[in-house]
Amino acid sequence: MEESRLKELLKVVQKNTSYYHLKWGSVSDPGKHNTWNWAAFFFTIFWLAYRKMYKLFFIFLGIELILTIPIYFVDMPEWLLYSFYPLVGIITGWYGNRWYNLHTVKILNEAQERPDSQQEPYIKTKGGAHLGIMFGLMAFSLFFFLLTDFALAYVPTKTNIKDIVRYSDDAITLEVFTEDYRWNYVKEEDRYHVVEFKGYDYTEDEDVRILFHVFFDKQLYEWGDVYLNGEKLSKEEAIDYELWIEENW
Image (cartoon, rainbow, N blue to C red; front, side, top):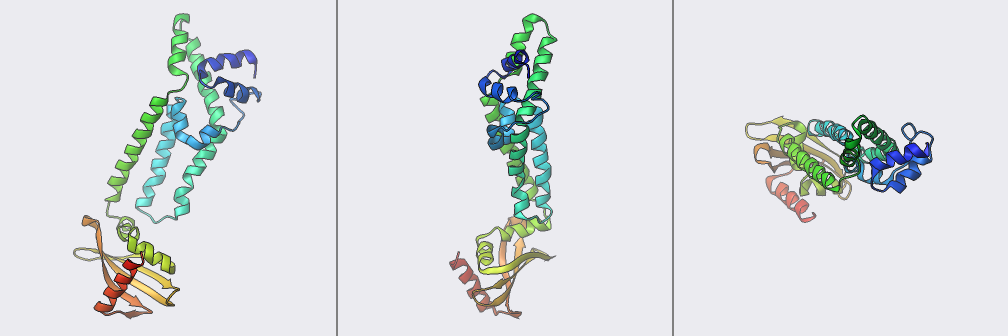
């Protein structure tokens, strides 16, 4: 990239200009060629906000929201849920300097279309970075997703109903002591929903089947029938098994 053009763009950058002088100066056209940015990799969309690339920030925020909504309606593997954030980090890390170059070019071109007296104030306002705005958008996104989570978690879907029990301490213990476990939504009764747990207890060499009664409106559950190797336990035996699970948490 030509040194004269690069110096003009660095006036828009304002902060950490030596870094972008090195990165953009190392390629013929930084608007078409990628260079790695570790800050963009680790801080992802918040780096975009810091560098005032608000359009990209809200695009990624919207994509994250769209990808988050299905988890309240469909059972999804955990690796799929957590793979989004490293993927965004890789994308922003690889494309960040390129996007930022295009962003600064746009600001510089807009400034040069204005009268001379307005160009420098425009560049100072639109260019540079803003830590306060970044923290403000971080708080906004956190509040937004907490609000979204609160709203969607109370939609009575089969996934949300199962989550009442399968994210409990009892469920964690059951999953630790069993293999090939799974949670199934069975049916809706008058006052509650029936959720089934199935797994193989490798410590006792037993097939375990437990029916839970989930009171979704109260966000509570209680133990129902317990089956070991296909045989239903008596009420006293079921209580003892429940206590054993609770004690081993």
